[in-house]
Each structure stands twice: as structure tokens, then as C-alpha cells.
Image (cartoon, rainbow, N blue to C red; front, side, top):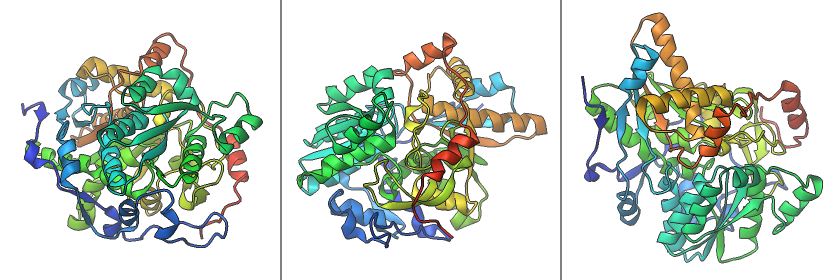
Length: 454
């Protein structure tokens, strides 16, 4: 039996991020100005992002150097371990080999600091005094508050209201690292007040929280906005995960046949899968990469590919992506980090070109497999990670039915130690099976008046 844990040394932390755009056969379509509907250039992003991040956002270079100062911070928790899930394999009675990359060892307990540290660094380099952002489950908000503290930058977080109420310890983490956090929608912004006027009891959404954070940043020249997913520079920063995993899988002696990660906006999925997709592009490999999303917010599996706003109010550029419509408010499931109406532009193009796959799962089934995993492997997964595990189980059972052995790799993107209320609701029978209806999706999409894509 090979080693259960596969480690790397500190000097094996990657020194470059991988930009998949350089390898894509069809490049992403350009963003459009929300007013004129004409393509916009990098200068349109300058009020929100520091120039170095804008350069990365539009870059076609294959490799982007990781600054030494960022890499030094990474060494606080990176490289992260890769495990073979022997006990889980045995529980499932599958011939599949199951490996997982564990990102829960970071200070905030998830993969999110990989981009938070980089974004805080570039903002500090350009003299930014404060960063605003949104957060769903609180993992991104806590990661950015940690990073901003390291680089002495103020941080203001708009947390989706339902998650603010469900996950109080995430809020406390954000406060502990010195950031302010508000339950969105708030009365602090025009966007928030508009939503509250329409629905005083709104549970909030990532789209609404983005509107509030963007508005706050646009009001102050010394403030910039930071996004935890969706945009290309964010996804690119996360590729450190997959690059490490590739080295570790080589040490284990197996190249994965299937790579799986949860999907909200794309950072989790991109971080693990993009370096393996590079092998498909460069070396002709045929590694299946599967995004796993909630059945209650199924933009990849049931949405449409068209231009849409990244936020609810319509303050962001129009992005070409799979979407359920920017007015879509997902059900208040406990996987708060996956409750986003749209998908990252790069991931959307890859799916459109059939270079990746997507599946959706109900939250009840996800918690069921998450508990099984915890009992087998000892780590309690974040609710978001449970979606990836659900796809792992499905593929492992296929191996059993077909009598073949495949190697499956997935991203255990974070621990669930601050999500015990969700697990308690599951054990008490208070979680409901929820799948959005076709009528609900059609009603949301009918409100879209954004450009269609031919």
C-alpha cells in the first residue's frame, strides 16, 4: 500500500500561476459596457482594480510570476497535503482510487487565501487604503480580511444575509482579523436600499452583495474592490492548487482519470482542474474535469450562455457566461459559497466548447455523502466541498458497476468546522431537498434584457 499522505517540500511551492487562456482553442468573448453594450478595454476596470490585476485579467501569457512576498506568505500553509482516501474507498467498496487535495489547512480554513493574499499584495503596491468585497458562506470574507491585515489595508465585507445568520463564527473570524462585516442587503448603499424596498425580508444573494461592495468602492478613490471568484485573475491565482496536486500525483504514481471540484463562480474548480486541463491541451491527455454545483442554483447544468451582469443591480460590465439571470435569488441552502447566479467567463467558454463537464446535486444528498466521508476520513467537509464529494461517489460507483479501476482526484476545498449549524440541521431532519423548477428558471431568464450570444 502506498503512502496515504503525499507531501511536497516548501521549495516545491510553484513560482508561477498558470493562465489557461493562453491554451484555450476559443478565447473568451470580451466584456461589454453596461450602458453602450460595446466591448470595453482594461481602462474601464481601473476604478475597481489595481492595474497589475487588470493586466493579469486580460493577459494571454501562459505563466505569470508569483511575487516572492506572496510566495513567502503562501509558505505559512503551502504546500497543502494530498491524501489517498483508503477508508472512503473501502466504505464505498469501489475499485476506484480516490485522492483529495486538502485546502482546509489554510489560516481561514479554505482555498480562498490563495487569491486573497495576491490581491491584497497588488493593492498595497498601488497604495490602496481599503478594499470592499462580498462573501457568501464567509470563507472569502475571512480570507480577504486575513490578507488585508497582513498588508495593513482596511477591509469592508458585505456578507449574504442568510449566511450571516447561519454562520456567525465566520463573521467573528472576519472581525478578528480587523475587518468590518455587514449583513447584505444593507441600508448603507443605494443598491441595498433598493433591494430592501422591494423585499424587506430578502435573504440576500452574492449578486446583491457584489452590487453593494462595488458601489462602496466606486465612491472613494482610495478604495478598490476585490472579488473572490469568477474573474480570470482570481481563477489563475488558484492554479497553485492544481500545480501542487500534479506534482503530488506524480509522486503517488498515478495520473487522475477524473478531476472534480465544487462550483460556485469558478475559483475552486479552476484552481484544481486547470493545470490538468493543460495536460489535455499540451500532451493530448484525456482527463475528465467535472464541476459540481447545487441543484438549487444550477447555472452550468440548466442556465443559458449569454451576456449578463455579474451583480444584481447591474453595476458591473456585462460578461459572457452561463447564467440563471442576475435577478435570480437562490434558495437559502447551507452551501453559501455556491449560491451565485452566474459562472466565470473562462469556465463558461470551456463548458460551451465541451472541454469540461458539469453536474448538479441536491443539498440533502450532499450532506449524506459528506457525513460518510467525515466518518471514513476524519475531516468534516465544508458544505460546498460536499458537492464535489457527491460527484466523486457517483463516479466511484460507476467504477464498481463496470468493474474497472480509475483514479479520481477532488478538491476538499475547506473544512466544515464553522458549519456545524448546517450539520445539526441535517441530523435534526431540518434540511429539505431542493431543486429549482424549470418555471422558476424561465421566469428569472425572462427578465434578462442583456445581449444574446450567437
